[in-house]
Length: 227
Image (tube, rainbow, N blue to C red; front, top):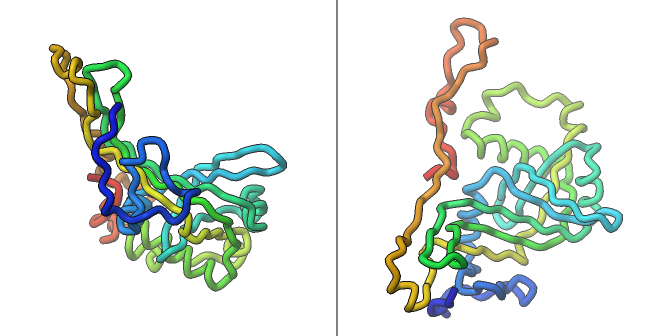
């Protein structure tokens, strides 16, 4: 696929480590684009190495200012390793569409993704508690105050890890491929099909007691990634 003209007015990468080399015209380095992609997702992938073995773990994430957060069990091998400051790779990807080309090697997908490198750190107790409240209300504003507060044993059983978003870049593919002139001259159809995550109606727990009304944060819930 040939490269379109590069927009030189976009923000510069934080360092050569973060600079996109393949399909670099898809790169986005401005913080607004990066934050929007991170905030539109609930599930991320975190890559790391333990004892020479690579792992990639899917987990929930959330952002507060220039930090990305994730959490898990205090007994988690992943979190125990990450809190020691080992190198971590954080990624989020949204699939937005399928692109059909005139040429077999030009079929593609439309997507938004973020990749960040850094060293994770364990959040202290006061930061952990505030961060988990933020995460809960990010899922649905008002959910933290509505639900039963965590017991002390539940707090002890949970760790929160965070990483500074210093070495971070985004990649956005939202167009059609540039094709060779001879392919444009064929009778083959080309175009795209958009893909979207849709939100369905709430389903009540069958074990609810009679008379319990649906709270407003459920009635008004809107998935941040839905379009």
